[in-house]
Image (tube, rainbow, N blue to C red; front, side):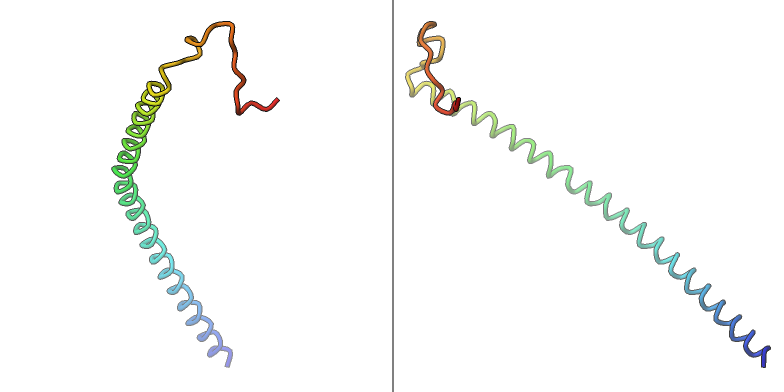
Length: 95
């Protein structure tokens, strides 16, 4: 009877070892697949980020152009042109 139990234990240990090896192999495959996917995603995002950076630069140039146009419509007055002795309060200043 004890030989049968030892045989059952040996077979179950063998099955568990085979399952563990299969899990390790599958985990390694998944890790490689995730690594490839991350590399591909990084390669796909690089041109997108470059495009966004270009758009931000264009927006900065457009903002500077609109500021200069707004200055021209206001009559070209700047703080230096108003006079050195006259100071206006900043409408957004709280204090």
